Length: 306
Image 1 (tube, one colour):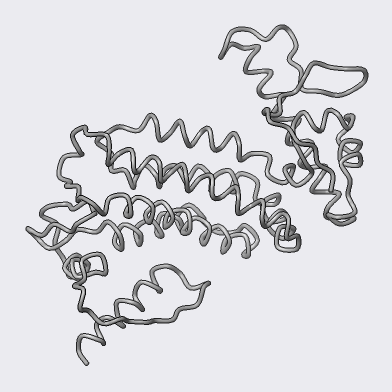
Image 2 (tube, rainbow, N blue to C red):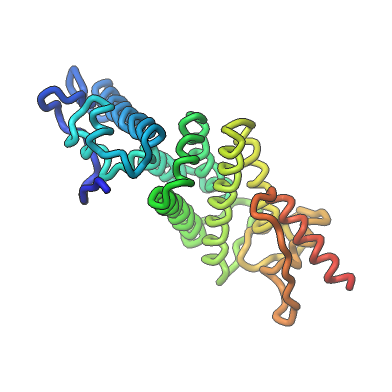
């Protein structure tokens, strides 16, 4: 496997020889100035060119058979230029995640304190979805390749874990900030850290479920609408309103909310009594989230009636 180890980010250097690098022309300019934006755009274009060359070669001759030298040659640069942007050829499959992770972190940091933290996290993961949806053909081809190459699956798992850690830290920070909480919401106590981790994992899992289903369909359909639907399922399941006057430990409760589902959630596993019986239900891994939740709710209802 072609790989170099580097402890520093991959930034393009200036042009050397005949390499087609992403150096800016006309001066770098101040941060955020025309020169800086032009340089950033050229760096991004180079990363995309290398990633496209890698994907084309992987598709035509196989992942294991493709070398970094071949990828660089196909993109019109030297081997050393490739390693200014990626540490290994598998990194070239995921060229956008570093920038997207920064963008999501900025979104979390700039969120209004009055906005529900789960809504902020949902907005953050939607940025990741949009990254895939912006190039459906590339995303579908990448998905098909990743399914065939274990090393790429492992890399994808590591990438997904970065988003989940980011969301968990954000949610824990909202609980620990000590500032006034959003109007109309109450925070529980010792279960807050558990709720933060479970909610972050649920949002990422919902994104992955919707994304895989969309990719298996060839990148067709309104994937954002599908993700929004999954968010509603998560809200009802983990952060739903309890019955009027009730306060579920470890969750955010909207006073005044009512309805059959809200009353049922008040009796959920998060507030179950220690003496409750164990319920096991089975669902297909490719079933929509709302169908899974409905099956669990139906099983609970049947257990109470028996």
